[in-house]
Every structure is written in C-alpha cells, then in structure tokens.
Amino acid sequence: MALGLFRVCLVVVTAIINHPLLFPRENATVPENEEEIIRKMQVLEEKLHLEQLRLEEEVAQLAAEKEALERVAEEAQQQNESRSAWDLWSTLCMILFLVIEVWRQDHQDGPSPECLGGDEDELPGQDGAPLRGIILPNKATLDHFYERCIRGATADAARTREFVEGFVDDLLEALRSLCNRDRDMEVEDFIGVDSMYENWQVDKPLLCHLFVPFIPPEPYHFHPELWCSSRSVPLNRQGYGQIKVVRADEDTLGCICGKTKLGEDLLCLLHGKNNLAQPISEVEDPLCARGSPYLDTMQVMRWFQVALTKAWHRIAHKYEFDLAFGQLDTPGSLKIRFRSGKFMPFNLIPVIQCDDSDLYFVSHLPREPSGETPASSTDWLLSFAVYERHFLRMTSKALPEGACHLTCLQIASFLLSKQRRLTGPSGLGNYHLKTALLHLLLSRRSTDWKAGQLDARLRELLCFLEKSLLEKKLHHFFIGNRKVPETLGLPEAVRKAEPLNLFRPFVLQRSLYRETMDSFYEMLKNAPALISEYSLHIPSDHANLPPKAVVL
Image 1 (cartoon, rainbow, N blue to C red):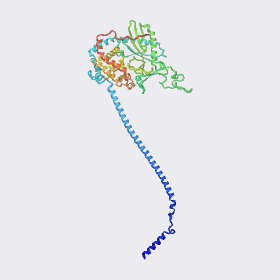
Image 2 (cartoon, helix red, strand yellow):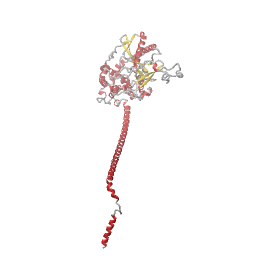
Image 3 (cartoon, rainbow, N blue to C red):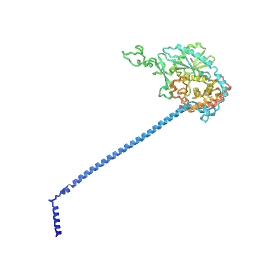
C-alpha cells in the first residue's frame, strides 16, 4: 500500500515538473542560432590566428634585429680591441726602430771597430777580409815614395800660389774698374780653397781654386734660402739652396706701400710721398731667372765669363802670356799659356756668401762622375770648403809634429788619380777621400797620427772608404754632424739638419756603383806595384795634356 502510494506521488511530481507552463524552455531557440554563432566564432578565430601570426612575425623580426645589433656591437668591440693592440704594437715597433737608428748613428758615424782596433784587425768585406786581403807597402816604402814622388812634385806649390794670386788680384781690379756700381754686380776679394790651400795637392800641373764672392748693386741684396729650412725637400736637392734677390726697402721693413694702392689721403710714413717702394713686378731683378725672383746660375756664369774677358782685354798689354778658358762649360776655368809652351791652370768660381757664415753658394764645381746635377738653374750648391780648410788648420795644431794625416790623403789621392788614367773616371773622387779623412780625424786621438803610423793610418783610411762603399753610405762631414766642434762657427741649422749621404748616387745607379767598386779594388791591387815603380823612377811629366784652350 505504501509502495503504491509512493509510486503515485512520484508520477504526480514528475508531471508537475515537466509541465511547460510551470518551467518554460529558454533554450528552445538554440537550434535556430547555432550556425551563426559557429560562423562568428570561426571568423573570430581566424582573426585571432592572423593576429597571432602577425605578433609572432614582429617578435621574430625584433629578435633578429636585436641579434644583429648584438653581433655588430661585438664585431665593433673586437675591431677596437684589435686596433688598439695594433696601435700599441706599431708604437712599440716605432720606438724600437728609433732606438736602433739612434744607436746605429752614434756607433757607425765613425770608422768601424775593425779598422780602429789595430793594423791586423779585419773588417768583413766582400771576401771576408778588409781590402780583399791586399797587403799595402810598409812605412819605409811609403816614406821613400812620398819623399821622391809627391813632395818633389809639389815643391813649387807656394810659388805657384803667389803667382796666381798676384795675377788674379790684378784681373779682379780691372773687372771692378769696368763695372757700373749702379747696375753691375760688385766682386770682392778672392778666397783660396781646396787642396792647394790645404797642402795636399798631388797632381801636376798644380791647380789653384779661388772663390770670388760678389754682391748685387743697390738697392738689392741677396736672401739665401737653405734646403734644410723647408720641411719637404726632394733628396736630389739636399745640399742645395736658392738665392732670392730682394730690394733693401722691400721685405726688410715689412712695408706694403709698394704692393697695394694707397688712397690720395694716405701717406707712407716710411717712404714718404716721393720715395715709394717700387713693386716687385715692375723691377727687372739682375741675373734672375725669367719670371722668378731667384738668382739664375746660368746667367751668373755668362755674366762672369763676359766680365773676365773684358777685364783681361784691359790688362793684356802688361803681360807676356795669353789667358784662355780651359773648359767652355766652366766659366771660371782659366789657363795661363806662356810663350815657352808651358801653362798654368786655375779656377775662379763666382760664389755668394750665406749670411755672415763661411758657407758659400757656388754656381758650379769641378764635376765628379757621380755628382748629381741640380734640379733647376736656380739651385745653388752649398760649399763647405772654407770650413774644411779651417778644420784642417785647427786639427793640425793639436796633432804631433810631422803628423801623417795629409800624407795619407796625398798617397790615396795619387793612387786614385793614376787609376782614373788607367780605367777612366769612376764614382769616387778626391772629395770622398777628404771626407773620409775628416771623419777619422774627428774620431781618432791626436797621438794616433804620428809620422811613424803612416802605414797604419793609410790602411785605416782605405778600410773606412771600403766600408762606406759596401754600405753605399758616406755622410757629409758637416751636414747633420753634431760632433763637429762648435768653435768652427757652423750655422746651427746645418748642424741640426738630416745627414747627407754623399754615396746616394750609388743607390740609384747600379752600373756606376759596379764600375766604382771594380775600379777601387783594382786600385788597391795595383797600389804596391805602382808605389814601387814611382819610387824608383819619377816621370818628367805624368799629367795628361789638357783639352784645347779657347783664347780670349
């Protein structure tokens, strides 16, 4: 009964719950809108997917950019580190190079230790021995050779100098009398230089070299410009300079009244109204290159030749000999020809003094085969001949009596002269021999130049010359040499200049270098036989006849 009642109640409750009026069905429209909702959801899903792809692409791009920036920064850092390391190594290498160069300059400017160590020390050469093992004559043979051959040949050097100086005095005085002081150059007293005035002349006929300084007429003056005053000078112009011709009222006072147009109301307080400085463009500078304010060597040579010719014609009636030009390309190469057929050559070289020093600009010098011609006609060679004479004179006073330094130079010059006549000229000249001797005089003690050490010093001189030839380096004695005594009064600009290599042509001209080396070693090979031969027999005249002269 109870079970049946429970069942009835369950049926009633179920009917009531499922009655539509009691609980309306709210989801009755779901089936109608389900497709639209699904479509919207798909569209939204696609948009979200596209947005997700875009965001992923942007994130990937940003990551790539970040990675690239990090890579560039890393490379830059590595490059900076390597550059810093390279700069450090470059600096260290440069410092090391400078230290080595300074050490080399200090220890190799003088003669080599092998030559300075003694007579039997060896200098490594091409064959491992100095002078290729050639044995030079001993002191007794050299003394005998010098007394019989060299001293006898130069015994009349003093009389030759006296005669030439007297004649040149008269010639220059005649030249001065013909010059117009308002227009022509004015010549000064001559200066004797080179071997005849340094007492080591060997060759005959004896040859005097005389410098003839000249100055311009007023209101001009010379303004020399050394090569070492410029920072960038070609190697072939080292040792040269230029001479600017300026007016005395021009650059000295720094006035610009001649270079600018002053108004009518303006007046120059330096020159006044009637004494204006004439513009440079309106002035024809004497003996200058065309369109240039610098003195021209070719015009100076022509002027000097014409002036000497006129001067000789004025005084020729007083002398019983003829005067002729020895070489047409050398204006001051003159030759006195006596009626007996003998002749007496000498060189008059027009020069310009460099400021107040003993340096002189020369228009020409006796040519050496290895000499380089100047780059232009306005380049003047700087001569140290007066300083060389002063240095030899000063050094001789400190050397023992009868020192052998000039004897060594005379013997070496004699051997070189004979070798030139055998094989022709080479790149080695007497000036190189004298330069080597000057270096040795500066590095050697005075007691090392006693007369009893002639053979040792001659061998040392030839060793030094051989070493210089092998290295293709022979520094000028004065230029850049701070060991030169300050008492000589050498200009400071020259002392502080870069050293000048006299053997630089050998670096550029290989054929000339080979010929010079062959000639040098052949000279050494022939030296013992040549000295012995000339010691026994002295030819009456062992000088070649000069070229045909041109009579004035």
